[in-house]
Image (tube, rainbow, N blue to C red; front, top):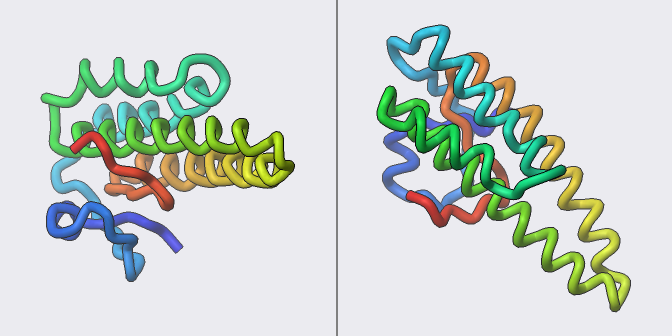
Length: 138
């Protein structure tokens, strides 16, 4: 199941989870924009290992005015990385009472699955919504 959503559905309710799998390809999207979208999704790998949020933020700030697809993708990736960072901090705090260990494993699984699904959607030029993402950047 793919979590791709059209922009109209996102504009109506940005906190709602997608009810149905709707593939929404960005119209008239060049190969270069699809590649940049793919890189934005892949920047989560660097974010998980080195600098939280910084790689996606830099890519988004550079490319956001080139197309609505790159603007939307950048915001979604930044929100997902912020969410992963917050979930990781919460699991670190809860590690003292042992519930944080399974939570940390769940956060890692969420991150890996999200990266894979987002990268596939980005390479196809589809809009993508990460599951369990706190959307702070609009």
